[in-house]
Image 1: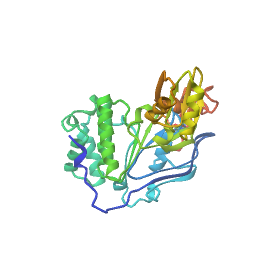
Image 2: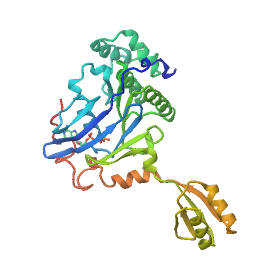
Image 3: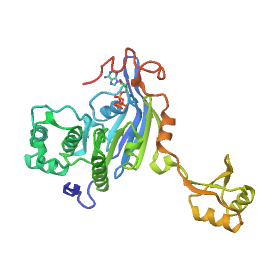
Image 4: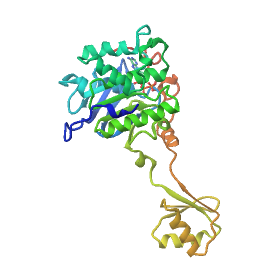
Amino acid sequence: MSASSVRPRAAGGEPGAPVQISNLTKTFGSFKAVDDLSFSVEPGRITGFLGPNGAGKTTTLRMTLGLITPTAGTATIGGRKYADLPHPLHTVGAALEATNFHPGRSGRDHLRVIAAAGGFTDKRVDEMLELVGIPAAAKKRAGGYSMGMRQRLGLAAALLGDPQVLILDEPANGLDPEGIRWLRGFLRHLAGEGKTVLISSHMLSEVEQTVDDVVIIANGRFVRQGTIGELRGQARVVVRTPNGDRLTEALRRAGLQVEALPEGRYSVSTDDLIQVGDAAFSAGVPVHELRAERADLEDLFFQLTENTNRNLGPGSDGSTPPNGPRAAEEGAR
Ligand SMILES: Nc1ncnc2c1ncn2[C@@H]1O[C@H](COP(=O)(O)OP(=O)(O)OP(=O)(O)O)[C@@H](O)[C@H]1O
């Protein structure tokens, strides 16, 4: 099973469709679930939409898909609001919840119902089931499906219209390592076709190897956007020597910045271990440790979003919705 049976775009075909979120805000009663949020998601790339539980990811995605109305601001797909899309199923496919399948109906029948409503054939249904790797299992009742199978079925539904944009809420949830690897390759293929792929997650480590770009939110507000590389920041070399002054001088002569760390270690502004090792050798300085170091993304994520899990109840940061999460339950259609 491969992703190669997705209908390829005609060469020089439609331009990609970016997703643009501009000053998007959603309040439930007096609680601001999404607060003046702005960011963009580019075609041909996989973007991770990240934030702790309750950060406002699903609410943002639901506004983008026209399922709830923003209190303020706009969300557009290819320059248009969802409601104004001439062919919504061909423009955007989404899988927001992996659980809402009728338990007595087979996955295939579930998909056939959606397909019929969208004007797609049963043949297309079977192609999509093949594509997501559950052609046989989809004939069984959805009530017995594992989380991973539900995720794949949701993905098949989202892909029925061969959309330009794919929006997936926590798609790695419930997948085993093999499933996550499969999903990674699958999404990479879709992005390679020029599709815009937006996936949410509350764990950066879960999507770190999958995404090109990240958008981080906390408490409904924008925190950071960038490529995974930018987020990791400049790699550094850490070197330990008993002759720090001589090594520092030699490295600075080579145009590098050097910062002294505790216990005879020095942090050097390069990812080139050989350059640092050679500089030490030329300066006649013994080296007791030499290693490249990168920012730990999971640590960074926790630092950026610390104490902002609004689903933990009052006291986590004081911005918990009144009477607990989802108390107001308003605005949803
Ligand atoms: N219809 C609603 N009525 C009231 N509060 C709501 C409603 N929908 C969401 N909320 C609240 O808004 C906040 C953001 O919820 P949302 O589901 O968007 O977060 P999330 O980032 O997707 O979290 P998770 O990772 O847990 O799914 C939460 O505190 C949630 O309880």
